[in-house]
Length: 579
Image 1 (cartoon, rainbow, N blue to C red):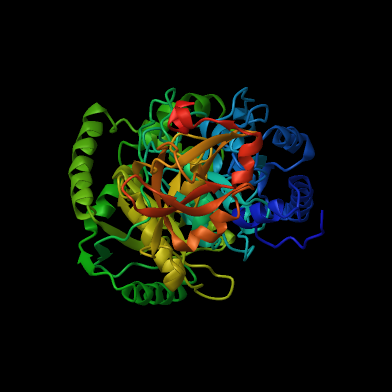
Image 2 (tube, rainbow, N blue to C red):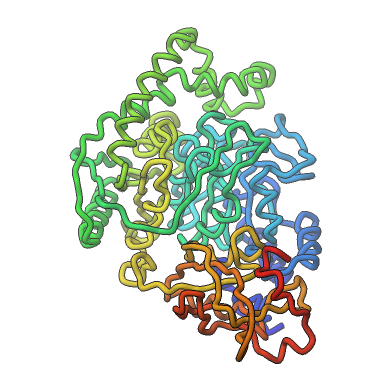
């Protein structure tokens, strides 16, 4: 292994390249992370910090995984400590609540099966109740760039772990904005999928009907790679549903609020200027802008904490709080006990449901082919200011986030230009639960401008083996922005062989005379992704022209003819699916 200077922040795609070139090993990276975690101890990032005791079994497990088939092979990630990691305590920010699960949370299990390495459990606002990152008996998590400022909550430690270079990505949760506010305050991308798109089995509930597992990373591309791994229906999760995210696209229009956003805190002026700069960037994207009345979004948001929904938190945690009053952070207990308000009876719940349904219908109609953009936060605070006024400061942090899950929206928080030195500012893009491809496509354009992969020239790629739908390497196609187009067949002058690789792969060889027509799939891939995709193809395979049964030629997988000498001819099957 060559020595390499590890960057301050970690990128999934860069780590994968360094692993492939043998410049870095997962073990060396994890040792560096443990060292960094000790250096950053005063940031109060961890409840269970990184250690070889936790990491070693997962490093050992990589030996039995093929990096080509496991898209997150060797990638270190952090886990918010209200999400289960088997054999490691889950505290939800309360030592007296602690239990040690025997199984991974469903999202964690999928990541580990994809080769990712869990490195530790991160600090949070106790019971995921807060947006500031200061409501933990394990210490106030400091902002990654300006330690005197708040880090955002409740997924505070998860965000700061990524921003400080201790993880390539991290898992948070989001009920009212906890997967977005910490992203904005620490200059990260925070991706909140649609309700049910990611399983929540193995997550300590805050409001079970609204909870989402989320991801923090340093780039949009990294968050979407994690999304590809975690997304999908979970049979044993009552909140799970099938929500597919299509390839990145641009919306027909962008929605902004008619009302000037309110800004607050000691940096209100800087935040307002940063928002105005972001709006100017948005106007340069050449997408029509429509201004809408956003008052109903605020009305919907108020239902979360000023209405009967807070009773859902009390239903899950009330008995523990009542029996362990000294264990619960005072401000957290005050918020949770609001759920015991006798005014929140069954009638109030149904009244709120009916009101929300009208708001939800309005939002989804407005967002049919559109994306709404708002500031992620209207300001920030020093940690001292939050201590002095814990309720009001926290409430203002949710001004532009609380409506999201109540209205069944998807969202992604992305960085804008900093409001001042080491003072990040971010925006959030919202759309309906079936439009995740629009928020990701527009985010890509906003972040990357002329280098965005959206609407770039694409090419058809013919695949005939493990890259087809349902097979082990389909994820490589998805990782590179490819989208399935249709099934097809080659001309009747091809031979398919079974290569003696591990795992076995097919090789498609063009013959001079008689042959067979082999089934394959056509995918559309951005040309900008083709080069990096080609580097993953092992010899004797490669990309070349493949003739279809209609006489057209497309780019596709081909094999060197010499490989046929020691390989089984499986042309008789008609395709890899029939082997």
